[in-house]
Image 1: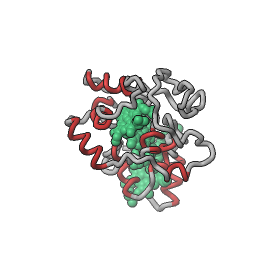
Image 2: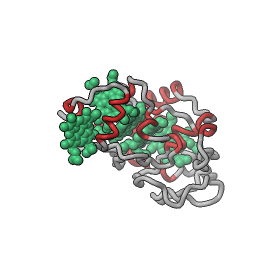
Image 3: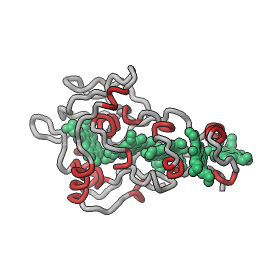
Length: 216
Ligand code: HEC
Ligand code: HEC
Ligand code: HEC
Ligand code: HEC
Ligand code: HEC
């Protein structure tokens, strides 16, 4: 599926207004308190804006939070961090993945959703230069180009998964995707392409195991 199909036309100013109205950018406490011992980087200082370009997510020293030398999961074209956005700033998952509750597939945010905030905030360094990764985002946006995000979770074509049914049944995203809000870079916490996993939960919860529910 082409990521470009996720592009939503929308005025940047409208998005900024929505961003300001819908999300209070207060550093989260809850996520840190719940964080298990391995998330040494979950409590982050405000970005100093020191440039970093490595797609491995290795940042230079200084006051940057320490990250493991190698992060799990594929490097992305922009080092977008769920631990900063969904963790530290507690931006709700559905702010960006807004169709998860009413669609089979989940969208990624459009570049204009990102720019709703990043037209304003660029985590500049002391010289006023924007954070290098945010500069990349602005560049994609200026060119009306889609960011070629690398897909992580994908079922084979012959199996179908309705997100909205699972969200409506009250399952947290984390049940299947793990603690995304603590991940500097997204990685799969388990292989989701596992029919036994699907059907055993369905059995426990009395949900259908009719072949044609998932294969059609
Ligand atoms: C500010 C926007 C934003 C917020 C908030 C956000 N995400 Fe994301 N999410 C993205 C972007 C961009 C990607 C693609 C790049 C990547 O994988 O990091 C993504 C990727 C993902 C993926 C991997 C998709 C794949 O290819 O399989 C999952 C799963 C996910 N997000 C879940 C969540 C959950 C759960 C939350 C809330 C805890 C959340 N996201 C909050 C923007 C966001
Ligand atoms: C609701 C507001 C909001 C949205 C939407 C948003 N961001 Fe951010 N982003 C922030 C804030 C706040 C910071 C922290 C800035 C700081 O540290 O001064 C940040 C930081 C960043 C940083 C760099 C700083 C770091 O600590 O790594 C990058 C890169 C970034 N965002 C990319 C994105 C991308 C790509 C998207 C869209 C997928 C996005 N952001 C969507 C608010 C937002
Ligand atoms: C019951 C397990 C389960 C739950 C709960 C769940 N997901 Fe998923 N998610 C999956 C599976 C399975 C896939 C792969 C689907 C496919 O390939 O069709 C996936 C794929 C994704 C993707 C990648 C979609 C794409 O087209 O790139 C995103 C983003 C995502 N999920 C976000 C979320 C968010 C946000 C939530 C919570 C609102 C959530 N998921 C809840 C199992 C789940
Ligand atoms: C953690 C538990 C859990 C896991 C794992 C899970 N499901 Fe579900 N599934 C549910 C629940 C709960 C429902 C909601 C039933 C309802 O709407 O009443 C559901 C509903 C469905 C439905 C709609 C069934 C119908 O009645 O039409 C399909 C299709 C489906 N799941 C496919 C999958 C697939 C494919 C996977 C694995 C990739 C999967 N599920 C993994 C719990 C789970
Ligand atoms: C709840 C969803 C679900 C139900 C119900 C379901 N499947 Fe699947 N099935 C999957 C998923 C997801 C995969 C892909 C992952 C994998 O290969 O295990 C899959 C894979 C398969 C494969 C390919 C396995 C392989 O190793 O290549 C076959 C064959 C299959 N299913 C047959 C069936 C039959 C027959 C039924 C009914 C008795 C059934 N499935 C019921 C979700 C489901």
